[in-house]
Image 1 (tube, helix red, strand yellow):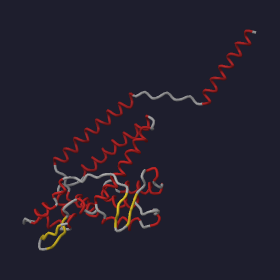
Image 2 (image 1 turned 90 degrees about the vertical axis):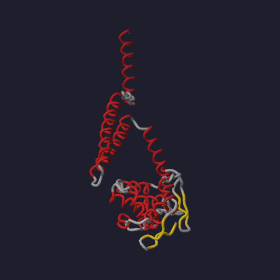
Image 3 (image 1 turned 180 degrees about the vertical axis):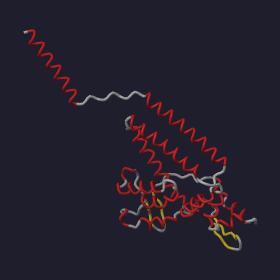
Image 4 (image 1 turned 30 degrees about the vertical axis):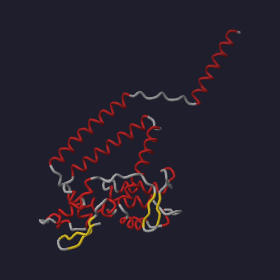
Length: 270
């Protein structure tokens, strides 16, 4: 961190991704919602604590010094899958696979993702609190909200590495599920994902403060998604369904009928 004087006050400014805390990331997402088309100012305010209005109205070179110090944000952090981290003298780890995760934890994760589906960054500290615990610890051993509040001070890099592992595992799990699904199940899953994207575009377009260019781009994406869905429906309709396997009763009935036919032929010949 680098100490900078801005408007006659001292502020600590991060110089690399490792300096950024989860709480800064959450605050950045909240401010970005308010500013719409000015995400850079939102990030500068959230990462430094400098009031938003002061940054927006600054006419000196101090804001440029802040921006130069935070030049690392020009290169997005490349997360790598990790299953454990050290924080405040304790080791926290998560299960190696989703299937080894307690069912209660899995339900809690799905609940958090659903409740924050439009504000994913806000769910990050609580997701880490659910997935990563101390040795022999269960979700009933601590207050989830308190643990999530503690993790606001967790380096963003640690949180993103854990999130990366979780997302990779989730995609792998969904891929296996998809491969083992029937045609109707595959069709339902794929079309549902397209519908989710369409709803996201619709919600985004309805937000105020968007520029004309952004609205135009969203409009093009909506048309494209409509076309993709139409092609998918047509494609699924053209795939012949696999013939249903005969049940045991059907097979047995066929064998009995065949046997009766032979017996009748034998009786008629005699």
